[in-house]
Amino acid sequence: MKTRFLALTIVLLIANLVKAQYISEVLEYKPAPGQLTNSAPWGIPNSANSIVGVITGSMCLGAFGGYVIFKFENPVENHPENPFGVDFTIFGNPLNNFAEQGIVSVMKDENGNGLPDDTWYELAGSDYFFSSTIKGYEVTYINPNQTTAANVPWADNYGNSGFVLANSFHDQPYYPLADLFPDVNSTEYTLSGTLVADEVMQTTASNFDSYRKAFGYADNQIRGTAPYTVPDNPYTPEAENSGGDAFDISWAVNEYGEYVDLDVIHFVKVHTAVLADAGWLGEISTEITGAVAVTPNIPITGVVDMVVIKSLPDTIKGESFQLEAFAFHKGRRDLDKTIVWTTNLEGAWVNSDNLLTYTTSGEIALTASIADMPEIMATASTVLVHNGNSSSILGSQRSNITLYPNPASDHIFIKGAEHASIEIYSITGNRILQKLDYSDNQPLSIANLANGVYIIKVQAQNLSKAVRFIKK
Image (cartoon, rainbow, N blue to C red; front, side, top):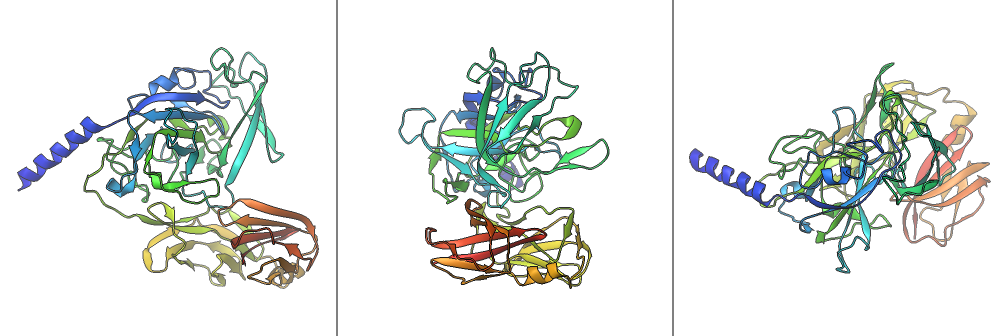
């Protein structure tokens, strides 16, 4: 019996190798400025050819928004019998403590012309629904017009600006050169996409880490072992099987953050998802070494539920803090699951709206689990909470902020907020309304909002609170 099982296993492995399909063509490659842009082998046009047919190529997308569009030899099916339900794996070159996340989008060739000119659907990863994630983010890079490495200025569509910083390890120009990338405007160009918060931390005087996301991003998980058609389980932190970053077409969302059902996809796009610098290590820039489609009918199962907590700051001051955590089933957000919080600090608790309140100061560890699946949990990094003076006017102001009526149909009122900034977000994290210098108990019209659940954020000097409300 053992011999027959071993023989069957070998047959399956050989079959997987035979049927494996890799990237067959790169259709477009437009890097953002970066320390590897214009430099072989990672940032030149031929880098596109290096990821065809292999998982050992070398392509760098540069800073935020740099992208590549590619396709496989055959369309990739959204196959329910694939291990863990995932359909393809993208490989990068991350380290255990240094990931450079890229967002992945997919397209079905609906008009049948063989070109990527239909609708892109983002594969919503673990951070997609966090309030820190910005959809429709744009960065314009300005050419410094230097013959050697120089800081590249940038400005975004939120009024922020900065530089892609040059370093001493790469002395070529970081802005794409006209003779290598003629489609890039030689003066300035704009790249866009979804932006996720970076996880860059300076851990020592000379060392930087860039921590991985939970799931759903390229150049995020380290590589495993062959056969590479047997994917990693994206819902566990360990690198299993092939490692790399496995993706399920079922994670696809439309422009409103709603899940869509695609039976097959023909094109894949990856863009660098963060805008951050890691000191002497340079800008965060997604790298890709190849991709492979997953082979179905392999009897591999595993955990497919998880909880993801939004990263916390090192120190939290005040008396309360809005936590964010979501439950996922097979990579889709599961709104039917209730999240239960536990803390290790006496005098601290989390309510049903994920609001952390504390009447004391000290180090706190927070764990979130699914109510009817307590074995599915996530633990936030230990942080310091500091309650300065619970009896202060500020404390009274925070505790007395109320929103009414809730649910509401035409107007809402906020009591306890004076000269405040009010922002209303959809449940998917898109900001849809903003009002500056709000006065206490002033009517705020919500008549034009669609029925549903929203998050309203109230911010003033030394004041920040988030409350959910229902428009009916």
